[in-house]
Image (cartoon, rainbow, N blue to C red; front, top):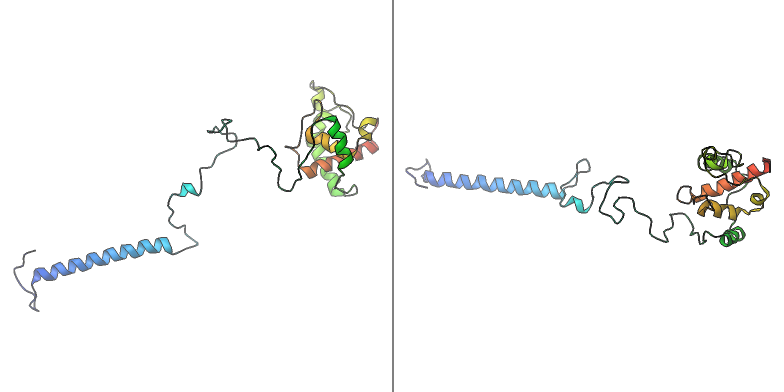
Amino acid sequence: MSDTGTDPRGAPIGVVRGNWGGIVGSIAVAGAAVFALRAVLVRDVTRPGLEFFPDMARGPAAQAQDRAATPTGFTDLPLPEGTVPRGALPFRYAATPADAERAGRELANPEAPGDADTLARGGVVYARMCSPCHGPGGEGDGGAVARGMLRPPSLSADRAKAMRDGQLFHLITLGQGNMAPLADRIAERDRWAVVLHVRAMQKGGSR
């Protein structure tokens, strides 16, 4: 930068202007650096901080039954073989009559027969999940039967009364004949509650 004069102190005007320009530029760079560091390092719980590659921490949300690049073509995938829900015990029985009888010998209902809340819960679950086929009183006269479903055997028959609690639980869990397994629709504790409800119906039901 050329200079044609001096300031009152005798310094070249051009030099003074050049020095001020450098100082202002340095201050601007330093301020920007401080702002950037503060944005990254200072944690403000009321404001989210800067994120780099957020997709590595949070992937896009997918809705149930959406199309997806999975082996089934959908977001819903079957549980891996041997998966046991949290809080449940492995059910090591096959869907065979022999294992149903074994379950009757080995399994006992953990729910107390006199627990009014559990009995009431069993009635609610039975009404929602079982009565469409078995009917409100367990006589096999549910609404699904009226629409062409094969009639299930009566739960008040001698054969059903003779089944042990574990055998009934096995039947609800893994199904039998035309009855589908309900382990994926009814929680373990609710299945035992249904067994209590069935026992209560059998005491007041007809053969």
